[in-house]
Image (cartoon, rainbow, N blue to C red; front, side, top):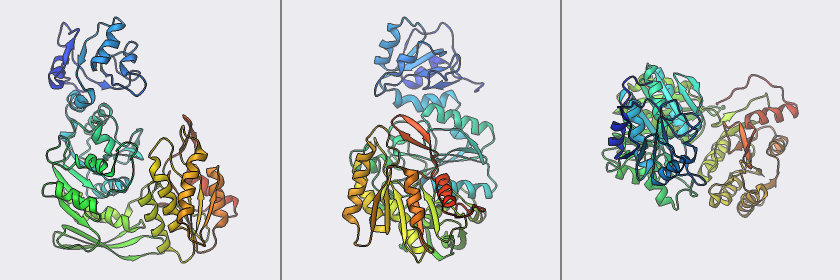
Length: 509
């Protein structure tokens, strides 16, 4: 808890809020939450408007000492006869980050913060940063899609970028546990919805941009502008320094938007600050990479396949050195990097390559299949699906990329959520069939486990198979219920049922 907790009146000044039912004394606020059931006694309950119900509807039964809400929320609270103090603002999200940061003593200012945004590669880059920074002697916190870690220890979390109150509380915990560097994924949702407001980023890194989240952003241009908030010096959430991978046109544009960015590339571009290239590839998919930075040449082994991981590693190096980390020990640390559910190899003694990957957007699927094609002399097979209640326009494109890159495609369910699974599968299958070559086989299975069985049964010596879409996830959302489902477990089960002995699994290759 923050021992120098701010007063409610001070928070009102920061938020530009009108105070209804002002307290008689200088009430201190030591915590803030969006969850009425988790609010600590005397804490501040931030009540946001929701898609179905306003958060203020849950204020009455909470232990909050005061509320932060909008005019609509005030009306709901007043109707119950509640006489606790209420801070009233026009837009709660617009002030939530700074208010939360003040409650917890602006913890991000006490640590070096490195944020990674982009469509693909955010998680991998943060894991590379975590491993390299740790090898360089720093105590590291990590926040992202696969969860939260403090000095390598897992901490429960839900969102890729937590909401502002939870994020600032997490920063405070990391600060209090002696963390020196925090690496985190920063989603476009987080930038647009104010989740990173009040956060003092030292370095922002950009990976790439491709179609995703067009259910949230109307166009790719809007999607780009959301990401640009992290780099544009006119933005209130822009980081102090920028490192941008310019391997695609969106990266080139982002480098133009940022001020004096460190530029990173893997295509042999002239005049970049960090350049990297693949030197050789081992049978396992591990790569030997040559990297040039600040006039010095480095060569190192990265235990992850794929050209996209050359770019991720180069971006991580650029971000680390930009905040003053010595490149030599950082790069040495990359040799031990591993990311759950990202090109995660499942080995049960079979004579073909079996991989699970999180790829759930067209460009990522294409990149994964291209990587596997280079690793094997045989055929390539894939299980692919698309999520429900999300960007429907990418479903056919995902199917098309699967059919272009694989010899065998099984369309299955991902997280159908509240949509009809068969309708989603039909869209993915249509895209696959339209793009398929004469020798490409397309199948559909309404059981994801059954689709994995089909994939394993199809594989022959020298082939490569991959299940994409869920990666590290251990649940499948059908309707509004999450059922336990882990692609890695199902791959091991299918391999065992097809006669492959469970050996020591060489994951994360």
